[in-house]
Image 1 (cartoon, rainbow, N blue to C red):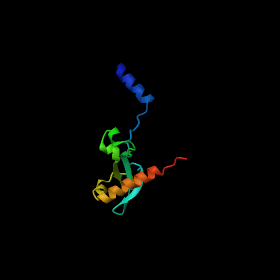
Image 2 (image 1 turned 180 degrees about the horizontal axis):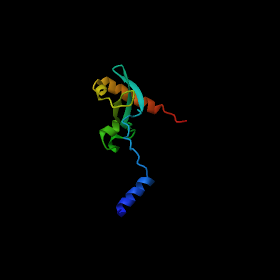
Image 3 (image 1 turned 120 degrees about the vertical axis):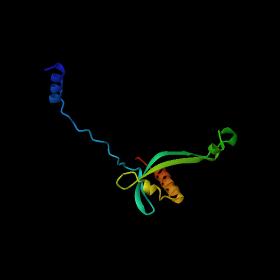
Image 4 (image 1 turned 90 degrees about the vertical axis):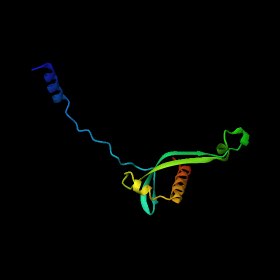
Length: 113
């Protein structure tokens, strides 16, 4: 018996083989809402709100910084937490605005204590 075979046999006895599970594709959303009357979860991937500047417009980098703006990106998941591109295709511009407004309201009213 070769040394390699002995080491392999010993390691099989010491370290049991374990089945590696694939990670779940399920996601827990940041908040729930409805799209076209269908309940779903929203996962916010990027959100930034730049408030309007109170200083002179000559002291800011751009007109966007002076007037203020918001950036908002999200993904849609079904109630079970799986990606729902079919539901994303049903979204209207009005739904997108409503979801963004819901997010900012929840974030502004959030009180950890």
